[in-house]
Amino acid sequence: MTLAFEPWLPFLPNNTLIEAVRELQNVANAARIKAEKEGGRNVIDPFTALFQMQLLEIAANDWPLIEQNRQIEKSLQNDIGNFHQTILGNLPGWQNLHTGAVVDLVCVERRIVAEVKNKHNTLKASDQAGLYDKLHDLVRKKGQEFAGFTAYYVEIIPKKPERYDLPFTPSDNTTGTRKPEDALIRRIDGASFYALASGHNDALRQLFHALPNAFAALGLASTNALPALLVDYYSVAFGSS
Image (cartoon, rainbow, N blue to C red; front, top):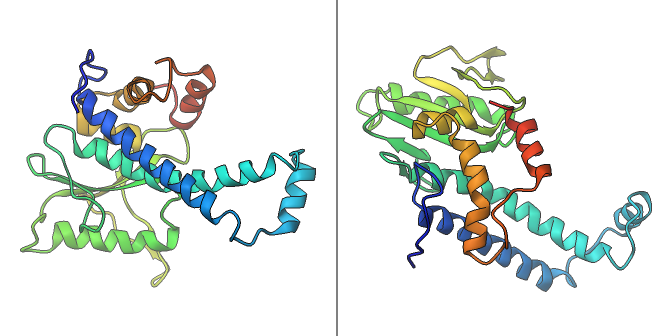
């Protein structure tokens, strides 16, 4: 389906953003249906429910819907990383290799590959050494398709609202030391990677502010303005730059 609008972003077609949002809408709808079907079959911890009602001042009649939304939120959060992978993979020159591929993103022209995670803590510290080894093999082993490329471990939401593009040197529990610095294996925050991939320094901020347009196009919102609270949340997560 083709929808005609003024361009919302200088680096991404409107329809691409709409379809990426639609995918998350489908995830949320599927999670809601599943939660409704399983609501009567899942065993609810009555102690947790009681403490939540009393300590968080939740009315008994409101609690089931809150619990259902919590389950939906968990499913949605798991797919936000895929949303970013889809957006980045549709930028000019970039390709989304999709789940199950050896790496998430590739830009052959710029000799870059990337593994995308939604938050700094999505990948456990104990698993980061394994990711380093995988990226090392991809870019350092002779004969590999991506030998000589620069590999990025992308943390969309950083631990602190700071930008960074640093050597990726996770702890290695097998040796008790950190993995060695390698100029071709790097760790980068989401705002910096969006800037690198798109050529627009504030690409992630632009994307965030364009999302209400996609919601409105799908009939999910009546306004294309972000609530001030969400603008504040963005600044807390990514800083003001």
